[in-house]
Length: 291
Length: 162
Image 1 (cartoon, rainbow over the protein chains, first blue to last red):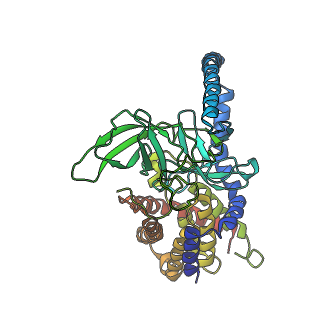
Image 2: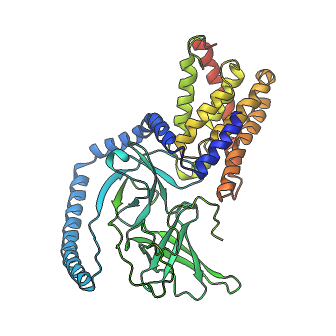
Image 3: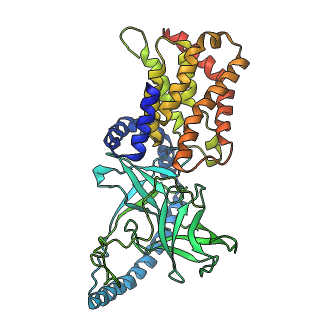
């Protein structure tokens, strides 16, 4: 009986959305356990911070002030560029909002399913977190929110084998898809033709196609390209730019709404809804094996 | 786990809570495949010690909580704990009087059986296991069993949980 029930529940959970609310409430009920587990580690970090040496704090403070100065200087330039960009865009009559809302969340020190790459963050629906919001750190894209509880939510990292993300090679503008491999520090580039112009050291940034991730954020650096003439696609690997495993604080970003209009389609016999998606960025739950 | 009829039901609940907490405790990356199945071990112990109180349904409930905590599919751990609880209930009389080394072998196979649904589900989801890491779990759980058994028995007798 219960075995059957479990199997039915797994199927429903996998294919449909009915159990989502049940899961949310259950998650709320068990979240005290997660907080209890997370507490000693958070407490230890707090202690080490509060007993840090004065000289070190001063040093850190100075470093941060320097960083802040440099960043401010860059920001001035950036603001100028942004204004120019907006003006040019208004000339081209394509509007684009750049304002993005940001929330800082903390990663809870809790291990989840060891076979997937997920993590728990301490902000949930109460703070306005929604499903499929992108997660970033100071270095680059980390992943996206896949499940929200009231005060915590689960995020899938870009290294999860069920995650794929549309990217662009910064140097050449080549579009491709980056999928997780399940390994901690490796991403796979999918459907890359053997003749594609890509080499080791190329930077990958989000392309913004698919609408989940805002365009222009660093994703990774190509570490390996193997071109085998016998295979249809080149075999390329990349290293994520974000420090996926040793982060305490992450940024949740509410991306600006995508541009409302697509430029005139070249041939449009059927009135298709606006959806220029060559790749599926959402975590596909179907059994997709990269190769 | 009716608390009225029997005494000290909270001991059982608390032991499961602690097991669940150990199951989500952060470990360094190399140690994660070796993490023993704490909840499974606690379940096996209570099934053979108090078969009239802890059984398949308790296993299922604990499994659901485990699933929620680790964000696996709802029912994945529930299924494996059902299987483990059922088998341990069937053999609890023999298992009680076995010496430790024989118990350890049984526990090893029970935990391995408990790993099966996880492997199936992963296979169905498109990421089948590529190494024998599921054996590590059973191995560490087996090595831990004598200590856990002794400890929980002392707790049970000290608290007079019947």
